[in-house]
Length: 337
Image: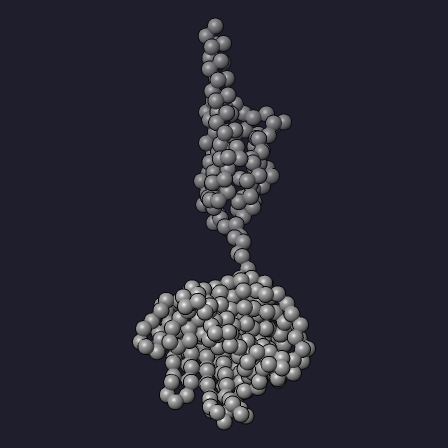
């Protein structure tokens, strides 16, 4: 009777060991072993220290295969000869220095390509400036020349607008605007803007992108976000947004203040102008900081971007609070592709 009892105790111990091994090798427990480079050492420990009550394993039986998650790190370890894989009887294994585990290769996400610069390297657009409306109601009063160049890192934009003909006889006006800066993620990032209205009336803005501020002519500074522009560079920053057909809000500096403008997608139109026949994106620009409180409404600017000419502005129309219209329409467009 005592012999049967001893056999029962031995059988219970064997059953307990088998259950613990099945739990440890289950998928839920194997995750940490996959991540750790020391996994091969765990395999040697099981072979080196068999339970003293475990009888020799019959030749026809093989140890239960480990879960695939545990076998993956072993690929980088030193191969074990087949003769040692299934020994006839458990034998103590002399401690050896484990080969350094090679970490599994880590997938590195490819860096997103830099967005293309929305501006040809060099060129100009020459506009006729009209006053009084459109069609027969408008009158040519001036010329405006937009010029730019960049080397892929830095850009310079300029716009020179002056009255001509009869308008110049009544009042000679020459306005100079310039914007300089760089590029980031395909966007123009101005560092300085200058607006010279003549007769000593000059306003300047200086952008500090590290501090996210812009300094104004009056010595004050205003906070800006990533997408801020100046009154000139904003026209050459619209192509990408127009292609997506999305509206957005942008902070714009004019030298004296920073104002938020809403840019509204108006669809595509066909324009026949002196510079040619164009399919154009139409964008409407309004103040996003609130309308005027005097009942006269707010200023509005509209710009048409030519699809055939790299999204350059081919028409810029300004309507003031009184409803008076100033229209710039391209006569000539030249640029390096």
